[in-house]
Figure 1: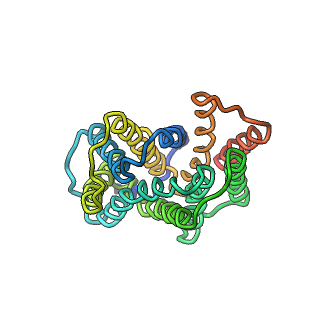
Figure 2: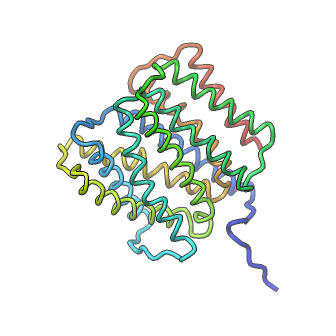
Length: 295
């Protein structure tokens, strides 16, 4: 008698898990570019217009990679994909709007706190049981993120901006939990494509209703599209590919590496020189993520 393996609870071999972790490393490397590119954007042309450019690029990328335009989704996957489609259309707006009144250091720390939120949610839902070493590694890595942020600039911002960032972090966390099983049953690529197609349609409606659907200069349009591919589309796809194998809780540990790559890019592209504490904080993050995923 043939046994049907439920993809949602499938156990993967070591080679598959290693490949998933490489995808998650690629996720962090791509996501780190977002901090650099967002600093080049001129949001005075319209915050949501820039966000819509990014979402449009992400949707086109996912369609091209998958080679499909179909939107039919199994009934069991409709709710999480719809929720994530709406959320993906809102998160960039929240983050970009908050960036006007919150320092980059505090913004990064608050947004990346979604990694801890995901861990807590996974534990509450019974999807993950953490060892004491993993808990210590997660918090040590987040401390490294806070150290880098405090060294690179003031942890300051207006209350409204902080609230927006907390909303964005919570949305990211709940979307990740919502898609955890879907990426395993439907597939990471198909899930990502459907989410971005919905987010594009929702984003277009939001931009129209808010009057933020406007013409961008060629330079800003290119920046928005590039941000969409490298800072949004590729990271989400790589993350979903990794999460489809290792699960949300373990995948989220790699989010702590985003500031590491962002700081690395700042050194290479912007000529920033790390001091001793910054270098130690970077090492703490890398070691923490490595210790969390040591098995």
